[in-house]
Length: 220
Image: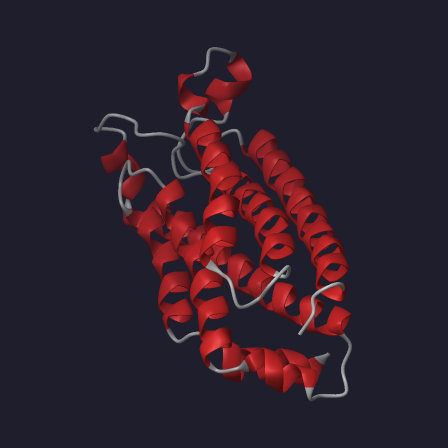
């Protein structure tokens, strides 16, 4: 598996992926729709799949002494690592906001969606997990066709992003507690982060299982 992961990073991962991961730092912008950051994360999956096609990665992989299941696991694992890195950059941005006093500036401006806090990280993981569970099973029906699977996977992804961005506008104490800046109400928000991490893992594992099943029937 280590060799497969190295192959993915060297031959499949598009250089723009690292720029997109770095864009997790956009969380430093006061009162911004932070779900937009996640769009860059899912675009990485599109560009990497496109790069794999242009590099004839499928033909190369079939020539290796590996199973189709291993090919799927490696590709999804690399994408999961990219997504975790993106959320990790966002987490570092939350710390930087506190140090730089950006949260104080944000308090002076109107709220735009879910603010930059720990709960945002948990919601982001769920959104990325939803994308994985939708995209990879569709993509592995025919890895040469990328556009339609990507667009279809973006539908549930965007729906969930709209839902979590709407949290501050939903009445209720729990929703209000999730809508504060920074590290306030830390216990509740850490709980959301932990639940989000578990859901992300489960959805990503589900994507591997479903993608592996459909790829087994793919006629190369």
